[in-house]
Amino acid sequence: MRVQLLDFTTLDKEMLTTVLAWRNHSDIRHWMLSDDEISMQNHLQFVESLKNRADKRYFLVQREDAYIGVIDFTDITQNSAEIGIYSNPYMRGVGEALMHALIEYGFSTLGVKMLVATVFTDNERAKHLYEKFDFTETNRTFYKGREMIIMERSK
Image (cartoon, rainbow, N blue to C red; front, top):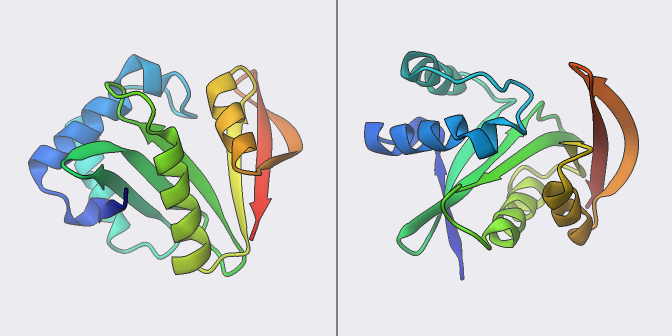
């Protein structure tokens, strides 16, 4: 099943509200670098700022008539991009579809040679998903006292 990537900068208010609700959901927020709840005003300002950024891209991912999650690319350079992914917290079994979309867009559309993910060491589901898609651990670091794994995949 093909998915459609909907650029955050083109989303209507209803879709942006859905994305914000997911991002603020405790099951999602817990795994984010910034685990604070985000206000609608800050969310809208962030989306507006994306219109002038070539180094960041955020997408709502749609499969058939359902929104299944979000993928993002930050620190985009000619060679690499940092990636992020989170699924609709009310759906199960969509991680692989999101990863396929993320990898295809990163390598084919952005044309980068490497995708870089940062994962908290206790986020077993995310680590397993990245490993399943041939990401390998390259480094470890700490953020706010929590250990993180840097994982990379080359084209």
